[in-house]
Length: 100
Image (tube, rainbow, N blue to C red):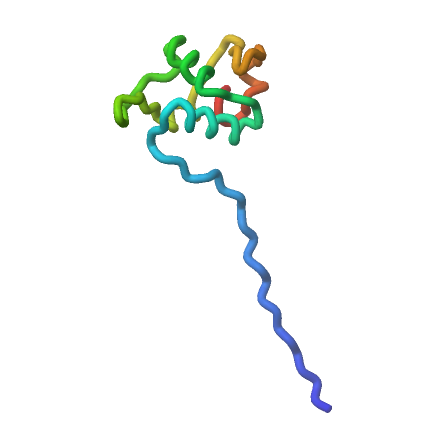
């Protein structure tokens, strides 16, 4: 019997990456993105509230519906508490990386 050596390649480690989002989304899909990335309930009405408070601005439109920059949503820097989905949240509770 011959000794054999079995070589096993080390599995490459993968770093979880944030999902790739389109450049702009409507209020409903942007709310879904914010909810997914923050773990907090966010609705289209919440996005409209952010627009009313001038934290987000429409950058385009699709069939008459405003579209908002996903990068701008990620870079929001809100110093005062937000009321999202009827719950007052301090910005640090919403997300450490999305809405600060």
